[in-house]
Every structure is written in structure tokens, then in C-alpha cells.
Image (tube, rainbow, N blue to C red; front, top):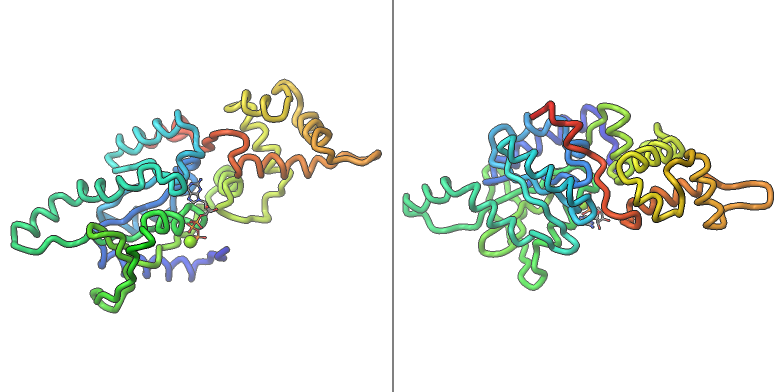
Length: 284
Ligand SMILES: Nc1nc2c(ncn2[C@@H]2O[C@H](COP(=O)(O)OP(=O)(O)OP(=O)(O)O)[C@@H](O)[C@H]2O)c(=O)[nH]1
Ligand SMILES: [Mg+2]
């Protein structure tokens, strides 16, 4: 886990801006479960008017109803967006197609000037754990992967040739996550994007229980055989008892919390989205 501090952020920003000059388009990865909380706070300032495609990763883990809402949310903002999943390869093959559509004018202009058809050059950016490496692996067809040295504008850069249509800058831009408020920090902690000791597991667990009671009561009740009308303490006790997390004189509810969070991360609870468009509609 990278420790972000002001000097590091400035250096990262500079590095990405330098690399931007080498690419046609930026693939901005956001976690489909938290499309707002997984945004970098300075991304617009960094990318400015660079053509951009947002990829909502891990979209088979997120709530399908929220997925649809987020797609229309970004479309309303006139931002190109695609739901993807790098493990099941959902929509991965549509990434290049979408890039071509976004870059249509530029590519046509080059063609009219008599320039040879060439692969689109792209770079991936996103906060830690959002799925940058997994997407690259999923894009790359192992048999034809070739890393070639190609002169960049100011220096030699490593490119990964995905296929005849796409080349990726080999090092994705790792952006720092938002540290704006506790709500965002909790969601980043739950998805595993940050490891922060400022929020205790027990506080995180209770927050998540309240969230589940509000948005996914049926998933909570089914998984742990509890009722949402029960207090959080009682629910945790119930989970701990069912799993054998107790001795004759003690119940380990902290282990029940670990189970709860692990079940979310491992998709055992079901498809869950933590960010809701309703909370962000004022931004549109
Ligand atoms: N289900 C699912 N899991 C994914 C997907 N993409 C990534 N993951 C998982 O998320 C975790 C983090 O993925 P990485 O590809 O390492 O993330 P990263 O952005 O490269 O992370 P850093 O290198 O730390 O910045 C891994 O456990 C992946 O298996 C996806 O589309 N679907
Ligand atoms: Mg990585």
C-alpha cells in the first residue's frame, strides 16, 4: 500500500501528465460498487480535455440496478462509460470498440492526411486495488503479448501491444484515493482500496450492518438467518454463535464483523453497491 503524502501526489500528477502526451485516450478505472468514492479527487484537473473512457470495474460484483443507474448518471454528464469485469471478461472486448468511437474524428483526420492506420495508444489510471493490473491481463492475449520499445515524445516508453488496434502504456497510473470524509473512507476500506487504521473494524462493521439493513435487508437476513429488526449487537452475536466464535464465557463479535466484511469482499453476500446515484444527483 502506497503511503500518499503531498510530495508523492505532486510527483504522481506530473508523471501522469507527462505520459498523457503519449496517448490518445485515458481509461479511467472506477470500482462499480463505489463509482464516486473511487474517483481521484483531482482527476479532472489532471486529465483536462484528454479523451477519456470510464470503465466501471468489478461490475459483476455490484448491484445490477445500481449499475444501470450509474451508466445513465455518467451519460447525463456526457462522459463515456462502460461496465466491465476483468475476471469474467464481461465487455472487455468492447473497450477498443468504444475507444475507436470516441477517437473517430482524430483517426479519420489522420486517414484523410494519408497516414497509415495505427493502433490506438491508451493508458490506464485508477486508485489502488481498482483492478488496473487485472484489466491489463484480461486485455492481453497471452500468446500475442509483446513488449516493444517505442520512442515516446521525450523518452523511451514501454508499450504493451494488446492487438493490432490497441497499445497500452505498460505502467498504469496509480492515483491517490479520496480522503475527504469518513463516509468515503469507510467505503474504500470495505472494498479494500485503502487500509486505514483510523477506522476500527468494529466501527466499520456497525456502519456496514446499518447500510445492509437500509439497502439490502433481504441479503442480510438470508445469509445470516437474522431479522433486520434485531439490534446490531444481537445480529453480531447471532452470527458469532452460528459460526462457533464463542467459549463458555465469551462471544467473539469481532470475529463476526470480520466474517461480515469478508463475505462482502468475497461476494458471498450477493451483489452490492455502496455508492448510490440518489446521493449524488445534486451533482448532475
Ligand atoms: N470480480 C472481479 N475482481 C476483480 C476485477 N478486477 C480486479 N479484481 C480483483 O481486485 C483485486 C485488485 O486487482 P488489481 O488488478 O491488483 O488492482 P490494481 O488496480 O492493479 O491495484 P494496485 O496495483 O495495487 O494499484 C484483485 O484481487 C483482483 O482479482 C474484476 O473486474 N472483477
Ligand atoms: Mg496493479
